[in-house]
Image (cartoon, rainbow, N blue to C red; front, side, top):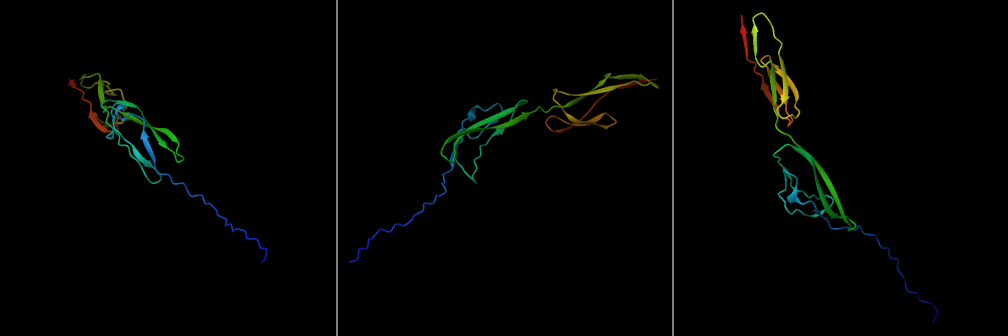
Length: 169
C-alpha cells in the first residue's frame, strides 16, 4: 500500500447577496382625519395603506368645500416603515385659499346730474369690490357705462353704472 494521504475535497462556495425584497411598507396617517380644518373632509375616517413600494400608490380622498373665505395650509402627518424596517414619519402641506365671490360696484360722483343745456359737469366713477378683496382686468365695455372684470375667485363678471340725469334749458 502506498502512503497516500486522502484529504477531503472542499468546494469553494460563494454566497451571493440576494436583493433584500421587503414587503411594501404600511403607511398610516397620524393626523386625525375627523379633526381637519374647517371645510376639509375625508370620506375615509380610518385611512391606512397596506403598503407603498415602487409602482404602487395609496390615495387619501380629501375634499375642500369652504363656507367662508379662508386660507392656510393643511398639514398631514404620517408614519411608515422604511426599507430597513425602521419606523419613520413625515408630513406634507397643502396650501389652500377660499375667496368670496365678490362683485365690483361702480359709484358715480355726483350720484345724479342736473345740468343746464350748453354746459358741462365733470363726473367721476369709482370702482370697488363689495367685500374688499381684489378683482382684476377691469375695463369699460361700452359708452353706456358697462364694464367687465375678473373677480377674486377667477370668475369673469360684468356690470353697469347708472347715472340719473336731467338736462334743463
